[in-house]
Image (cartoon, rainbow, N blue to C red; front, side, top):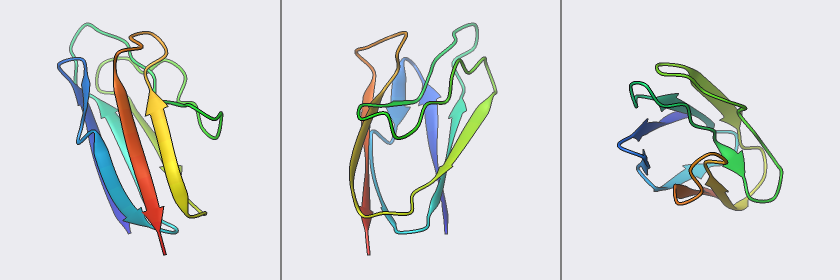
Length: 84
């Protein structure tokens, strides 16, 4: 199963996403002229800097709640919830 999150207008859309274990989530920066990151609050994943149109994918192999943020624009926040 695959899911996607857009990064646009200095926000993650959707900001909350529920997926099943084993889902691959792709984050794509659609904010022209702005670099963002997708950084797990607990250090599970980190995209590094994503330029405009760049993507980062992560496969969630365990259940739980995975809050994340943009390390550059710390007001940008989201959560991936992984269920069975």
